Image (cartoon, rainbow, N blue to C red; front, side, top):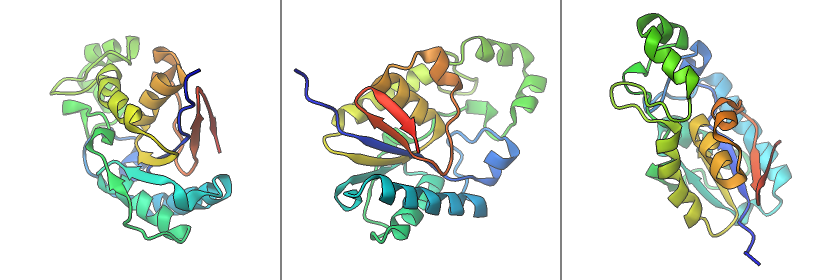
Length: 197
């Protein structure tokens, strides 16, 4: 019998101005906006209700500003030291290459043929200018998941959540690539199942 995998409480960073404008952030380091800060507080309150043992969990975040801010607000909201958590480079968002900073509408206008290629196979398509595909992201994320040995709170990005769902829950790649990843909510991954709170 295989041992059960630790529970993951996944939180996507709160809203940024670029989220609001529909811009591809990728690895551009954009801070939270006021709505994003409120969403981080909401996630903290939900975590406290969801995980009564929240003080004993491991806490790990992507090193980007928006994820660190979310983690620190979340921890402060539940009475934990805001900065007592780990950073892991493997959790950074996938990069959209030369498309970062553009909206999808702008991408479709500037590079219509490439935009169509991505729509046809979101999982495997890597944008121009050094962009990453979800398949490439999965290769980066899998070792992180393998390293988790206890129940863990992860604050990262939408693309990272989709990789988690594909690897940990067996969500098929086409479905995972198009799933909504909510801000201010918690994606709980227990064994092969997942739910939003």
